[in-house]
Image (cartoon, rainbow, N blue to C red; front, side, top):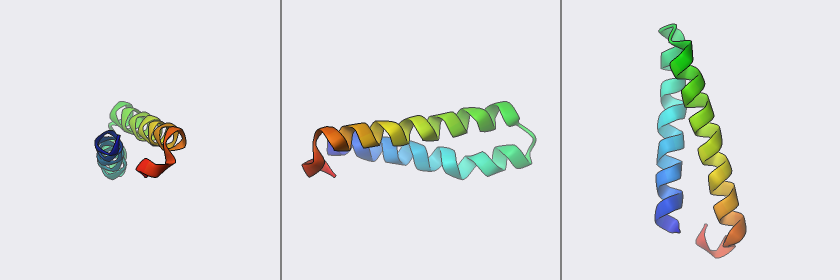
Amino acid sequence: MKQAIAELQRTAEIAENNLPISEQAGDFAQADLQRTTSQECREAIEQLQSQCPAQE
């Protein structure tokens, strides 16, 4: 479970980092995808942590 959370965290951070770059470049479709990816990863992390709090 720790590995899954770590991978989701990494993916969310990459998407959050790249989001303003995509927006600044005018690639709004990519920015929307990065925003959605980040949100979904964060939600998945919350779900995993709520199922097994000891894995945080």
